[in-house]
Picture 1 (spheres, rainbow, N blue to C red):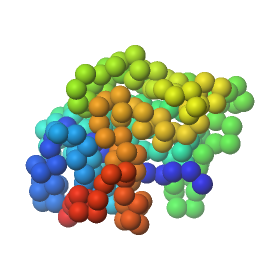
Picture 2 (picture 1 turned 180 degrees about the horizontal axis):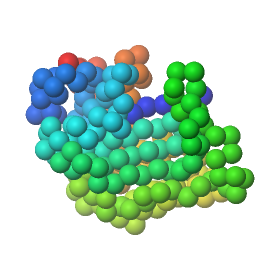
Picture 3 (picture 1 turned 30 degrees about the horizontal axis):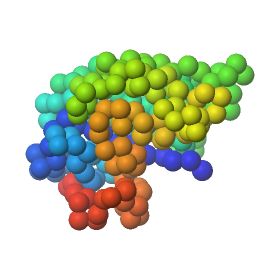
Picture 4 (picture 1 turned 30 degrees about the vertical axis):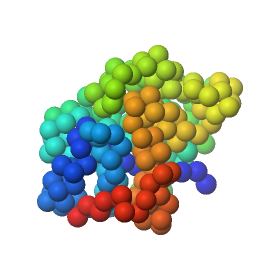
Length: 207
């Protein structure tokens, strides 16, 4: 089984974000991922992609919601002022049109591209993600990552990422953020799986 996780990164310091979110009824964890950036890990009852927009509106800053499904697919949505500005899908068509499982969760299509190879990513525009960056951005490297070409050839197969969580890690690295802390979610943290060089004392509860 691959990785399943979601989180939201916002361009605002952690000590300002946590009190506001607790008052808004949001539950989960938070960690700093840069001097002026925070990652929020919503609890399992809250979808990271859905809550990114409201967080952007509440905090008055850009927000990036991300979700990795089974290490196969990376979906990211950029919001500003609470409005969707950009959407990225590393494997469009992966889930098919309407098929869901017993609990109404999306079910992956066994052959989403009709046998013609991995579908090309949609939304591979590095400029859309720059508002979430800390420091200068190597746009060429970020575009390569978004198009599915690994920064390290060892992370790929036939020139493409093998795992969507590795692709997510590299995208966050290109933005100058703490990629280790952005490559996990609530479930892993609640089970004690802390990111590299992160202590339990640093993990801030929300709500």
